[in-house]
Amino acid sequence: MVQSTPSFTSESLAALKKRYEAASQSHVFKYFDELSDEAAAALFKQLSDIDVERCNEFFDRTTRSSAPQKDGSSKIEPLPSDSFASTLGSGNAADIAKWSEEGMRLIRENKVAVILLAGGQGSRLGSSEPKGCYDIGLPSHNCLFDLQAQRIQRLQQIASTGQQQAVTIPWLVMTSGPTSVATQKKFEESKYFGFNKEDVFFFNQGVLPCFGVDGKIVLENPGKVAVAPDGNGGIYEALRLSGALEWLRERGVEHIHSYCVDNCLVRVADPVFIGYAAQRGAECGALVVPKKAWNEPVGVICLRDGEHGVVEYSEISEEMAKMTRDGTAELAYNAGNICNHYYSLDFLQKRVPEIEAHLEHHVARKKIKCVDLETGEQLSPTKPNGIKLERFVFDVFPFVQRMAILEVDRKDQFSPLKNAPGSGVDCPETSRGDLIAQCIRFAEAAGATVKVVDGQDPSFEISPLVSYAGEGLESLRGKTLAADQLITSIDDVVTV
Image (cartoon, rainbow, N blue to C red; front, top):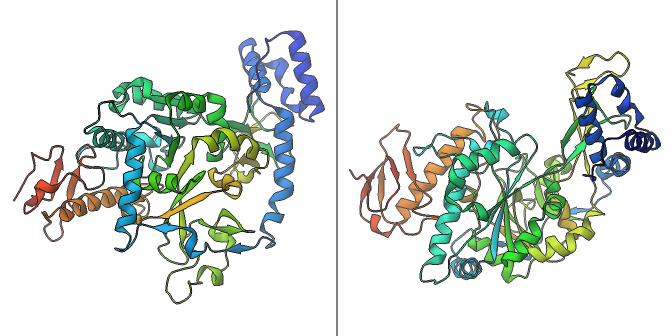
C-alpha cells in the first residue's frame, strides 16, 4: 500500500490535503500546523505513502461483507477422502519414497527456495526480540532461526553428495515493521547462520492504517497515523513489490516452501512435501495435521461452496465438528491447518496478481492507542476501539486450480510456540519437549537405546546438521546413549 513520495513543498502538501479531504479523511491533518518541521515532514511522508482511496475501499468492502460471511449461507463440506494424501500409517512408504526422491531431485537442480514468515514478536513469551531469536531451552541453546538454518544446510549437504555443482536453497525472510531491523541485525551478528549473504533475501510485509468503527483513519499521536501489519496474507503483494519473485526467477527457482517461524519441528524445504506437490502439478499446497480432538480450537482445511478454504473452529457447529467419515472413527473435519505451504513460482508470479483483486480483508477489532480529536488527549483503551484490516495467507485457496494437500504426523512436524513460559500449551516447554522427544525417536529408529531414568527430564538433542529427519544415524545401532547430551557429530556420542 505504498505510494511514491513527492517532495515536501507547499504545493505537494496542498495536493495531499485535497486528496485526503476528498476521501473524507482530512482529520489526519488536524494537528499538522502544530508539529515541528521534522515531525511534519515525517507525517507528510507517511500520508503520501498511504493509498487512502484504496484503503477506504478496503474498509468499506470488508465491513460490508464481514457480517454476511458468517450467516450460514456458505456450504461447508469436509475434504473428500480421495482429495488428499497422507504420510501416516505403514502402507504408503513407497509413495513417500517416491515423493522424497522427486523433491531431492528438484533441490539438487537448485529449483527450490524457502520463505520464512518471521513478522512475529516475542512479546507473549516475555521477550522484546523477534520470535525467531527465541531460545526454547535446548542443550544447544539454538534459537529458532538456528534450527531452521541448520535444517536447510543439512538438506543442501545431502543433495550435494556426488554432485559437481553446489546446491543452494535460497532463504527468503519476511519481516514486519517491528521485527525488520532486529531480525537483520541478528542475521548479521550470526554470520547469516552459515548462509552466504547473497542467498538470503529480506522483505517486509505491508502495513495498513487502523480505522475507527466509523471508518475514520486513527491518529496514534498528533504526528503519526496508527498502522498495523496487513496480516500474513500480505506476503503475496510484499513478494511482488520487493522484487523477490524476479530474484527467484533469475536463480532458476520453480518451487517454494513457505512456513512460520514459531514451529520448532518444521521440516524446512521438506523434500517429501515438495515432491508430492510437484508431481501433482500443483499451484499451491498445504500440510495438515489431524486434530487432537473434535473441539480443538484450530482452523481446518475443507470445502466452502465447493472450493478449498480454511474455516475457523467457531464457524463449525458441534454436530459438524463431531462428524466422522463413513465406517471409521476419523473426524470428517480433521485437516488441521498449520500454515505450512507450497507454491509454484508461476502461480505466485502470474496468477496471484489477478487473484489479489478478489481477495477480501478480514476485520480484527483491537485496542488501538490514539489521540482524542476533541480533547487532544492521548488514549490507551482497555477494550477494542478500532479496526485493523488483514488478509490471511490461505485466502488464495479458493482460487487455486490445482491444490495439493498432504497429511503429516503432528509429533514429527508441528509444535507451535504461541504462549508464555509455564502456560503448559504451545509454550517453550512443550516446544522443547517435542523436539527432544523427536530426537529420541530418531535415535531409537536407528537401533539405539536412549537411557532415560525414571522421573528424568531428558536433554537429548541431535543437531540438525547431523540429521534432518532421522537419516545418517546408522552407526548408533546397538548403542545405549546418555539422555543428557547434544550430538553435533555422529562420531562423538556419550554412551552408558
